[in-house]
Length: 473
Ligand code: FAD
Image 1 (cartoon, protein in one colour):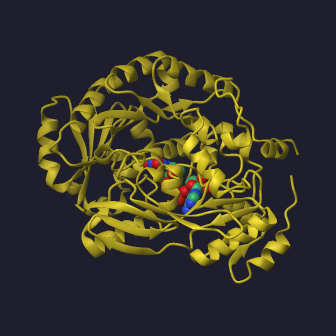
Image 2 (spheres, protein in one colour):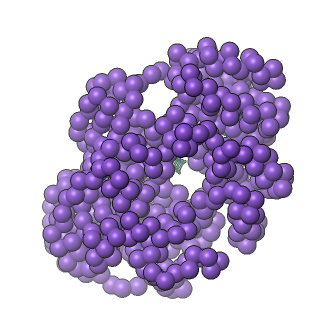
Image 3 (cartoon, protein in one colour):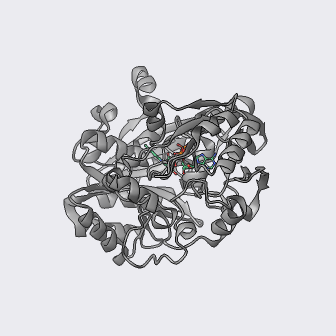
């Protein structure tokens, strides 16, 4: 591992908060990579040399200029809730903690602007208080993830049933980005240029400010419906998602017996034999949702937050904390040996494909679906729970999914390409040449930068050389 001149860095960042206690640096050098047994094995030894925590754009660019001059890598971190080791410094160096850059700057009709480190729940609360509006989209890590980390590392989540994902035009309005150069520049991006840095894991610029669209804020009601079969639950959810007149915020299916086993605080409302559909609906849509549900004779409403006793209204987690990767988290708490996948079942044969895949795997895979609007069509992502045996079997399960027609966004890979579409993103690569000429930002996460001739179809997993060294030592 290269030795960096951290003493010289400290001199150049005088006045900026930093932490170099190795135990605390190690703690901040982690995210939720441990969800994956593969990443856990590969990344456990990863740690930075120092955490630098600027509070202003001026401090940020000062720290970036110093790291550039001394050729010290720099890995940004918002809330550290990413699942793929995205915010872990594979080459050591500076862990850039952005949590102090957390101001909500402006709220206007249809838009909110905030500094990158602002926590999504804070942004949402301020938008509600100041204007009666709310964020369209947030991950289920609403209370802990930052707005910059969501844009740089997330994809969608709560709200995606109505608004699609972050990749869709209009779901991010503007980004301000600092470059990694001798004199860092601040660049404003909008329109198609947003794709240069959105979901680039901070490899080609540090997002300092984010402007997101807002929608009218409503009171949201949590509903859980139970079904005797997974097929009925899936068909109901798909059809409910297609009801254009019903405003929903989230729509998920979790197969029995998992909900009863892992949703501990909702357990008394659930039964082990129920496959559940978790719905978050606007208060004004509730009557419509209930009328629609009555058409499904075998559906049973198990839980309604508007009718729950006071203690439960206050004490139960919001239903979105039962969905997306919170489902996985709750399953892992019950049984650390489970793992998961991220699957897109393409429209229009999504339900049939889910059925075929789950029939193929039986008890090795447990269904968890998140319904979303994808290019204007209702379809579903899967975040199935997988009974983990070996890494080889996990790979085999991935390949079987792909052979059967599903798309896998592999959560057991730390690189952008292998976790995504398995090809070079030329736009992000070109932007990196411009904004990070020395390749110091979050090294090891963009294969196209490190190894332009890498063959994604080779079947082997990319191993970043600096990480290989660390694993060997
Ligand atoms: P971090 O983990 O700190 O960073 C994420 C990536 O962005 C890293 O590569 C980091 O280097 C980079 N980064 C951070 N800040 C900046 C910046 N200012 N400029 C440039 N790069 C930056 N994801 C979803 O999309 N939807 C979900 O519903 C969802 N649910 C989740 C549930 C659980 C329980 C967990 C553990 C994760 C979930 N995730 C989900 C993944 C993760 O929470 C989201 O991606 C989240 O938005 C990340 O925000 P963060 O602030 O924690 O980012």
